[in-house]
Image (cartoon, rainbow, N blue to C red; front, side, top):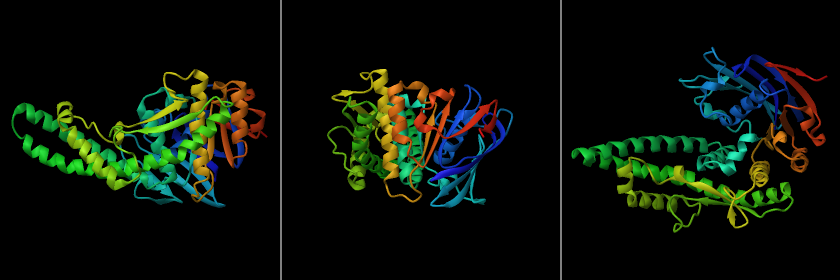
Amino acid sequence: MHVAALSLTDFRSYPQVDLEIGPGVTSFVGSNGQGKTNLVEALGYVATLGSHRVSTDAPLVRFGAERALVRAQVVRDDRPTLVEIEINPGRANRARLNRSPVPRPREVLGVLRTVLFAPEDLALVKGDPSERRRFLDELLVARAPRLAGVRSDYDRVLKQRNALLKSASAARRGGSGAGDVLRTLEVWDTHLATVGADLLAARIDLVSSLSPLVDKAYDTVSSGAGPASIEYVSSLGPEVELLPDRGLLADALLAAVEARRRDELDRGLSLVGPHRDDLLLRLGAAPAKGYASHGESWSYALALRLASYDLLRNDGSPGGEPVLVLDDVFAELDVARRRRLADLVSGAEQVLVTAAVEADVPEQLSGGRVHVLAGTVSREP
């Protein structure tokens, strides 16, 4: 799999840009603030329908424009597919495949798969649980695009259930109407357990597959300073055995919801479910968060991405291995880690690198150069 061409209209700093790429290594070189990361961010949006830099779509649209358009031609098994996404902040986004509209933008998920390394990855180790949940869920959808629908359904159920909990809490304080709200809430308890079990089972299975790959990758990038291990931590509590069995998990979720009913009503908030879970990262016996040094944290973040790449490359999905994107990571790494990372990824079908200084790109990743200056791009002859 590789991206053959990228076209942007009113995306970030670009009124218009058209760029041909190709297999192998391509480096986007330019001083900070010139727009090089915007190019790979657009490709990441095609792959995930989200940005690795911001949580909403509004900043992706060039200031003063109403919408942004991203087009990418993706070649899989020698067959090109044109993906077009229209980003409309405050309104529904739209998407097309080979110029034909699709019912929902998520229908394009899976056409392009990327694994992105970026400075923001340090938050996977040092940040909040939400960062690690997002990492798991994006990898889930890259493996099985249908799970985007499960995530969307779960978010919808959670939003509705939280609204009911707030209403029930207010009704209890007012002394009337609580019974009707509680009966409606029981219906949404079942929805939460059913959809939540689908998402939870998929995450548990993913962590089981990913765990040995993380340890292997950490050993490689850190010269054997591990071992590194990952463990899924559920809001169901340690007494519940986490097996990827949807029926058992649905029963456990429903029981946990019932057990926490009083607490949820007091707080007006859903306290049980995949939205409360975490991924525990360990170095040896200690949690990486709070105990790992800065260099160890970087190695762990790299290991998570490398493990993701290995998993996607070998999972048998059509289209081949994912596109690797290295967004300004070499400036964050010491010489030894730069060399190890470059050795590991240099054989990928397509590697896209951004760097402020050309010398930051290791020799192992010599390839095509695209210079980025003030929102214009020019390919080195």
